[in-house]
Image 1 (cartoon, rainbow, N blue to C red):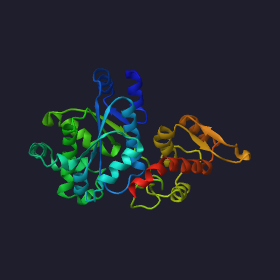
Image 2: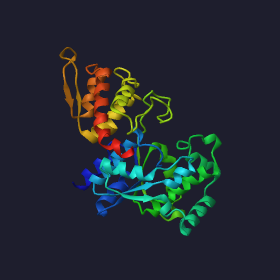
Image 3: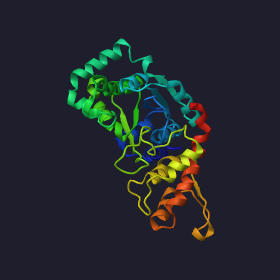
Length: 313
């Protein structure tokens, strides 16, 4: 794989790369660049996580060294209960070959704490709160600990010696704050952001394990996955904010490289799609009905989830 091919693999299914020129230059000049992503290790992995996990697999294929922060301290700061070991086993089962780092292994060290206090002097409270708007559950009543959260996330990039930070668009404000303060931290990096999947209940609602029917996790049974997908928002011939199409494009095709649609001959017969764009064209034209598509998506998701489900039990 040459530099252009590596770059294109990393770029696919991303929302933005800041900057693309720097990323291509990094690929050309450094043999094993470091890509990092951090996860709050609370509750089971769900569909939303699979978008960045799929991208980490792309980084891995492109020759990057992948580092995953199991953010046990961040999880506590954001008022959640950490389950780091179960997460590590699950990520390994997905196929990610990474260096796993517990936040608590370095975030209490003197130089890290001093760096956090130094950042705190430079960043206003309002800017700190704004950076957490997409991440905190209740930003209107944010605690002081939640304002420390973005400062730590910025420092994590430095202390993991990462060339690239990876996160969903909900992390964008934090990483942009980090880039703005690169003179303070003495560490700059390339930020890669992936799309956020719309709630399975439809636009305007959050994909959350606390909202029934909005999400699917790796502990869900095959029957639960099917029932949830069959009830999911998927307007006929519409692509905007369509979570079923997003799941296909961002998760199923990157993992399985195809999807098999089974249906009676009178409705077009069985068909295997190897390309998302062709599937989308058939969906928009009405050749592929939402009900048939949902059945195929449910079956494909279970194929992805079944081998890793046992690691969280």
